[in-house]
Image: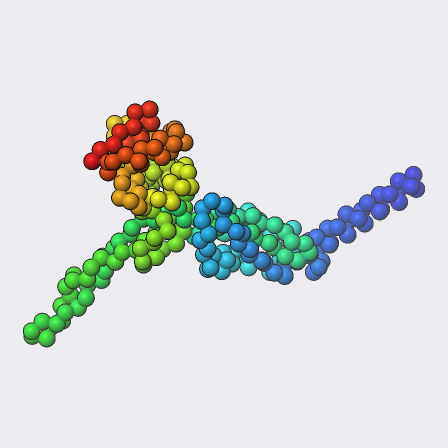
Length: 254
């Protein structure tokens, strides 16, 4: 009986001590939050966003002083995941006093044009009265997008490293074009300067333009490997347009 009492007291003290240590003591409280950006995903280039870590850090709520066990990792993950340029987030508790945020950066695979009307510039008439005339040209921006169709960065100069997606990103055709682009072998993807999709019958037909100016009619994302093999052969023949949408019967057209 006495032994049971002793064991019970020890267990109670241990539980109370553990509760105090994790929930009440100043030793296991957050003193810092570290944000680390991992290396780019292999095969998608070496583009880096130097401001990504700062944007994530600015988006996170301040958890300094909270006990580590009370930090809402799910909330931090949602906040970080909403930041432009983030592909994946991992939140860890860095015992005894840190929250560790590991970011996998999104990688651009294409770009889209964004344009909007510039504010009209004032002009002075002969009578010196000031009027506004819409003489300014539309402002063009270029939005880099990742494989999800999410904007990664916006630029004022035309990108050269990635192809233009000439179909609306959010449309079925845009998603089909991105799917085809991501499925292309590396040697072929590097030659693509523009990709788009056109609705034909009940499916989307994807086609893309190579740096040489030749147009490749690819069709759907199916049989991608077979189409790439056929294309290797077909580029040896004349014809501005090469159609491998049916790889068993490829054709060339002027």
